[in-house]
Length: 289
Image: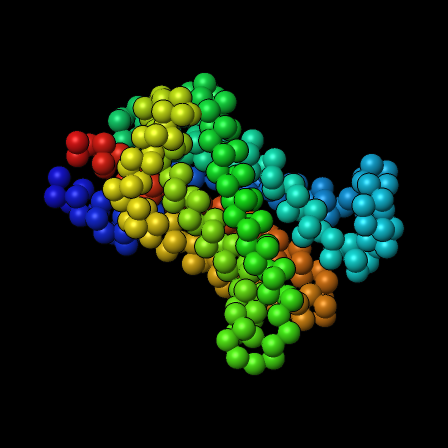
């Protein structure tokens, strides 16, 4: 019991234990591996979108929304990250949320000594799919809203003409810090909704009751949960630094594909650690009651 309490309070110990659990029990890892394959498959489709036979469908759309030049090298590689980003909205809401939920329920079943076979856990998770999607939609729109607010700050910063002084420093921070502030906003929203999916899946609560219970728990342990999300997310910072190295992609446009593959693997890896740790923390809190 003392060891469990220490895990609950020590973020690093909990993350270490969760990472060990993740790799010791491949049944937890399977949904995340499936997610990587789905993402890579989508990327492959978008990669070949300007080429025959996929250009029969995608060609007119790309030509109308952007221009026909984006169907050809090297602008096709400049468009690829944008197309992939658009694809992430439905993937996140309808697919990623389901697979993460399967992993969460698998962890709970392991903890209770219950069946963890993927097909069975999938069926159990599917019963709560509507509530999972609604919860994901709420957090998604909150993230989008925060990004929009930051976008207003970005537009205001672009109007600053100062070349020195405090306003120039603020402009530099806001403009060049955009991807890092967006990452921080995503971490904040993930923290605020951390226990919603575990409550829906483990307690079998409906979405609104799950939200209420979630916020009650978060109010008592906000900084612990925040650090559990924040620490693994730091792994993504080097990827952001590489992605923002525009000079590299100008020299070799094909690097955009490699950067997207690296982003997919890194983000899913981070999610696997974060949600394993969050679920473990929730179960520890539940057992300590």
